[in-house]
Image (tube, rainbow, N blue to C red; front, side, top):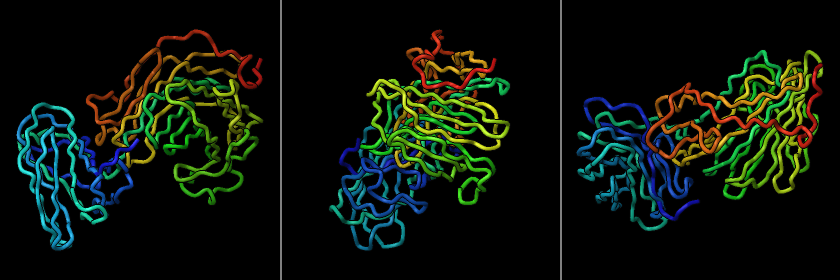
Length: 421
């Protein structure tokens, strides 16, 4: 997944530059390649950069071809001389600078040519001795005609935008089961492809590291506590009813609070993954939500977990799916997955195919990162974000995929809630 080079990639996303044709991009918006942990990225900039194999890249969308002047502001240890390279649009310029300690200095790389509009990667590299602290990169300064109308991310949040499929189902529909299939196409680490979301929880598959993948099923508590589950009263907590073999269960917080479960399982890129969530009201105050995952290696369904949710007594509402880059250190990489064959089952046992969906995204997608997309491909919806590729999908755009027509086979599914007659 990583290459052995020291490169800092600054994410240049969207706010528009004024007519002054000058722009300062904080180094806190940068990415490190090939190893995102090769240096420290903080509000102050890029610190503890000591590996000459680490490269630094700025990504920016240039709307106007023309001349571009580039300067990097950097702090270098007193008396230390560094040879720095900056590559833009296939051209590399060199600057040699000698440090003065804590006082920032400007490494002037001169003039580049942006031949055509589109995204560019701006790459900073040093040929310092291995283990020697190169210094602290503070910012990238750009000027010239090519900067006019350029778009850059100036926010230190480096995650690619989260993107969503919102299925248009009325809250009046009593959903007892929600079925969805997901196929990962591009899935760098720190990606969560969520198949079955509803008003009280989410269910999907995650890439945690180069060697670990998970199936995750979580259900929110009642109440308004967003951070610390210890502050949630027992009457508002979801409680575990059952879990599958080798499934870990516990608490979660910082995004609302609730009950979390996951199975460490190496699901495969390019292979269809199947998910099913069921809702069984126990009375007018509780509902048991269960998440089932189809094990392709065993050719059978398994229970991930079941949770009893208070202050419910009803069914699933607001079915949706999404894709998330949950750690921003590699938010420059593209994520893509196919979502298809979505169905809901009503409390009366009727199946309804969800072949229509609307696109939405998080606040990062409004201005900072416009490389976020939805569409239809191979008969499925797709969601894609990241990669600094041109184009975007407008918020609220509606799509329809071809209908499958064949309902899920209840004989092969896990136990479904009894239908109301």
